[in-house]
Length: 261
Length: 180
Image (cartoon, rainbow over all chains, first blue to last red; front, side):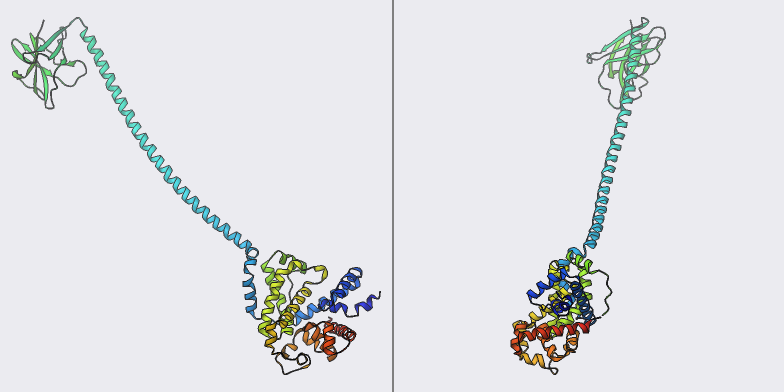
């Protein structure tokens, strides 16, 4: 086959320009795979045609590109702005994440602050409770000690016990005086006396030579109340007096009385 | 127009097949002028040429997967799409009406005075106009109007063999003109 003649026949140009009949085109494609010279001739004409066309280019109106790209916009989208979309999303995610973190952090702050406050309150109340318990415990210990001392004192053989029973009209009242015959100290046990009231106090009297002597007022005491030292007495009695006691007993307010011996 | 190539043809095709809008924009910027020139050669009316150009690029975008680099350059493929789309447009009913059913011979032989003469002076058609008339007519009918050699033989009342021979000679001359 005369390749040179074939190349110079114009069939290549016809093919490249899209004017060749389909049979001619198929033949040329076949031959171009067999003969590099034919392939090269095709390439050269294509290159020349492209160069000539580019040199003869006429810029189309700008509107054409705009219309074209807006009609294909949806197809570019995924591709064109992929990086941008990703970065926008990334930024949005970051912003959203930071807002969420802020909210969570604020919520935790509030939660922990409330926890702290309630724990602190609970601690303070426990502390107060503990102090109260300690105080109560000390009171109880003091009472126990007083009772123990009272018991020791009552069982002492030198101590005389004087039972003061209720006088006429107040029979169900009872009080006891423990009188140390050596030290002359007087202790009072209010076995059964009605409540003195806010502004009154029971007062112990020692009857010495037929006259009442103040033996002290009864405060709030655990077990025995230590009264005044009485050297000598034939009788003891209790009257209800104004707070702080009186100089002389109010006779109609006598509750209990008992003779010594 | 001097084209500064940023992409090799292989890269261009690959990126277009990956649906890259940026590369499609690059393709448009670099080749729309060359294709527009050919479209104008065939269509002769600017407004219609604009439509064809848009249609051509839509086709390029949609059909890039069917481009086979073993069969030729990307530009050759695009140029053929542009030429075929232009001829289809000219042949469409609406366009023929707009041409007011002018006689074929008028188109072929009139050298001046009609609305399409301006596009004779641009692009490939300008090159064709430098050929001898007996060749020029054949290229006109065949390349720019898309008639088959058989149709041309009947139209001009010359033997098919003559049409074939003259056309090939015309194309060889054309090649010699555009050869670098």
